[in-house]
Picture (tube, rainbow, N blue to C red):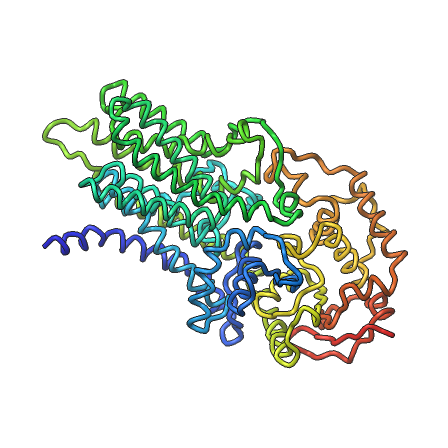
Length: 613
């Protein structure tokens, strides 16, 4: 009988998880239907960073070491040790993705497709379990999970309006951001599992069970540490908020709770020791590429902070009116979620370091604010109920909330699928040439001394190539994200790309920079310092000036004028890929390389090239 009741309690959560899973898979179904028999197996594209993650997973599936660079082909070896990258430090979700794929014989693209459905299902259930633990209301938990995951953009206040009116939402809105593969997707459900485990540890049914929850909470936190920086730091901030609130509100019972709080903290510290050892061996480029900023400036502008403070005000008002007991466990738990965004966006006041705070907003803070809203509604409803009345939120209201959430989720999915359709189609078409390169690699396997470097004229295609093919590329937007190149070499590879493809930057006037097409603007941004001129990415941003652009253009002009065979041989190209209908001017390339007649592969032409004597 007990087992039957337990299964019935999960039934609504499973229904909600199934609905969200089908919704999350819609973009993939749309891509497959659009391509029909021409579909090459690629996943639906939404985030540029997913490409780098899938390239890293592809390398792990192929058996390459943890410290690998799929874009330059430079892997860790006894005679050539490599520093740590963000990918090798945050290795747990990568291996959780790659090892089953290798066991089942799946490639990275197929694995990412399956991952979408699995994470949507698991995330819904994890939030369902958390809300149900605190409120003991499975109906509220099922509806609440859909509200949290589908209405995340509403925690940003203005993002939904911008999306519906077709305005720019690049840095404020993404299609279901928690599904970005493999991070934050893989560790995302574990964040809420950690919160639920802490709740169980503080409210155990018996003493021995309490220590079991403590151990599990510590283990899950360790998993988060080696999974995603923004999740483990948010988990630490939330845990600190909860402990502080608990000890302030319930000082008389501190002896009872100090043990579980202390033990979880000790387990967390134990996990952080090897983490910081890995971090100390990081590549020098990481801090620059990841836009680490030194600042003590406070930040109260984030929408999730404002929403969280509104929840705190509502709880305080309800307690003042006598509808809540502010020392109640559930009230403290709710307040901790509401206050966490304030802490994560202002931790730099103490630490003096800020690292792309936008990622907190997109991937965790807004979800915490919405969970606080759901819990607060349940607690205030229960507190306002009089004797003989129902304490739970009415079923009709919950059904309405679930339907509205799913309706908005459908709208969000349809709009973003349409907006990114061109990118998904383009990258699927590019897989044919990457597969051809993969087949050629079977005849000439990649070794440290035999690197068949590929020059892609289209940088989007260069970015996607390592997801399929083992050959390194000359340059793509994600080359500096790994540890294989220094900042100087990265700049030189951009120069080489511009030189070989005939991009003439010498005629560009610095004052007309904003009128350039986005590809040229991106390249010039990369030559300066990508991201440092955008307030969405760093607190120490500065406006890009004409002098910055002029200096970048002068640097390339000087490099092109002095280009020699030594530059042409480092690295040495083996292949060149271009679209057949729009080949570039190869006069610079042909000065140093011999090209064959070219092989037609889909809408691409693949040239084998050899350095001239």
